[in-house]
Length: 71
Image 1 (tube, rainbow, N blue to C red):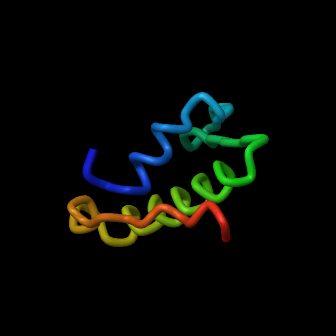
Image 2: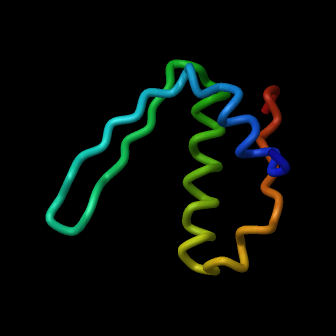
Image 3: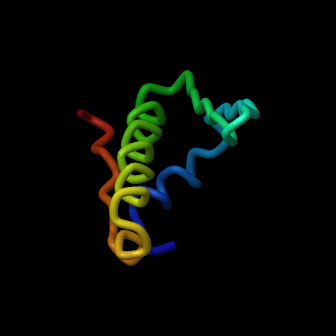
């Protein structure tokens, strides 16, 4: 996997809890973690999802940095 952020998320998938709530307009996804670094990953992922919504497929080939574990 070439994208550093997505690689880090998948490497920590076992530390993520996901709850999907169905609504009249689609779904609401709640992702949580007890691990502080994984929370940072999830927050960055949310930012990238917003970029995908804003920029469409033009965002897809871009790499997205994973946050530093020490930050």
